[in-house]
Image (cartoon, rainbow, N blue to C red; front, side):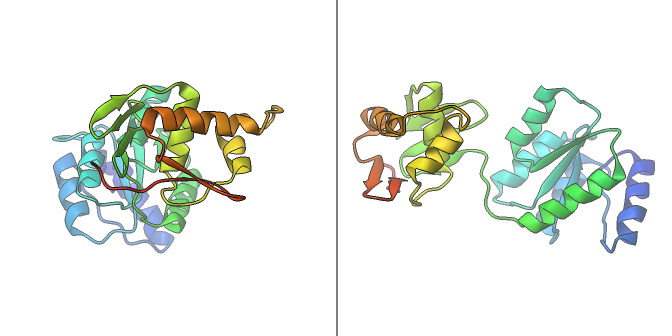
Length: 218
């Protein structure tokens, strides 16, 4: 736990210890970063406002290191943009102070169930790069201008590199499932992506769906 409010940190440590967890405490950003880098932790509770280094910087540094330990961010700020900043920086979940201890415990358990698979803040598949925070896409380093729907379709495919995604799944997740949408719209937008990214960027798997081509950058 990286938290500079000592009373809160100790109270949470006592509660979590009673639940069977072993909890280490760091009171500064640099201290928390060092502990997370060199310790074997199942999860990190990370405050945003910390001495020496903000929680945003800590999580960015961990993800840049390839450290995918699940992170729950705590903040006294309750603005939606603050939460978005934390999630875009690489956090897995966000909790605003004051919070319910029961909710905190539930969120920690959810993170532990999820484990620590790679969850990069910037998606890279072959020659393609997509930054969800800035909504920028590039191919071989050159920017690619996409419409909102084209971007949503590409992001969904890039989060499943090499996997075959059915037309129905794309309709459910990229288009509004509550609206009666012509299934052929998927083919239309796949065509748009191919024109902007290259004909081989999205493969058609006959009878199954579509797959983003996984190729090395040129």
